[in-house]
Image (cartoon, rainbow, N blue to C red; front, side, top):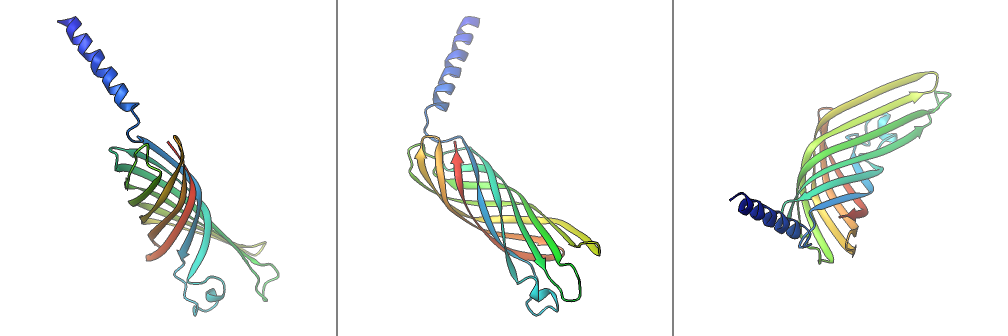
Length: 202
């Protein structure tokens, strides 16, 4: 009886290993790439003083990474992290030194991705819906005169998709990714739009 059970368990384990290695679809996806985020500053052009420093939206540059565990050929669970940066130096006639502004936005998101993860697919369009938190940090200073820090954390999301192109068995190129990236920081909602490109490893 014991030998029969042991044999059955071995057969089951070997069958599972064979299925996992059959390559019908990719189980794990790692992405890393460049990201551009057009961030809604919430500052109107007619705001006194600030309108000449920041516009309604500002271009931030940064990186995005994600890990996706595919639970089926078409559905995966995704964790996404992005970091975007913006530096500005503004000269004022009344100050001997310029104002230096260092602004950063971080997104920590998770959710669902829908995509054909077949090992044989060449063009792989995908869509995802992600939710989580964003953290904004701004450091401002005029050397030897003024220094200030401001930060806030609030809910965020990313809703969009893109297309991956298969290059080899374990390597894809993310040709484009487009996301609506709303955040709620400093008691206001920001309507941000991010785009990205990069590489995908399996």
